[in-house]
Length: 121
Image (cartoon, rainbow, N blue to C red; front, side, top):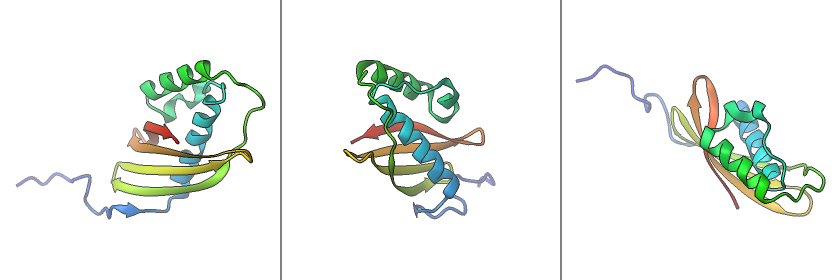
C-alpha cells in the first residue's frame, strides 16, 4: 500500500467558487476573444496559457485581423473542479453585439492556474 497523497485527497469534484481562479479565467477568455478580433496576446500573458495555446492564439489573431476597436467583454464565469490540480471554466462573455462562451481547462502548474485547452463558441 502506498502512503503517497493522491490528487483526489480532500477534493470534492463539482461546482466551486474561487474568486482568484474566476478572475484568471475571465482574463484568459478576454485575451482569447481579443485574439479572435485580430489582437495577438501580449507576451506577458504567456505564463497563464500553455505554449501551444499561446501559439494558436497568435495564429488566430493573424488570420482574423479585423482590428476595429478592442472589444470589452462582460459576463459570468462558471467553475467545475475536476481534481486538486484541474478546474474547467466557462466564461459567458458579451460585448454588446455578440455573446460567446469560452470553455477552458485550467491546470495548477508551478503555483499558477494555467490554461491548457480552450474553445470559443
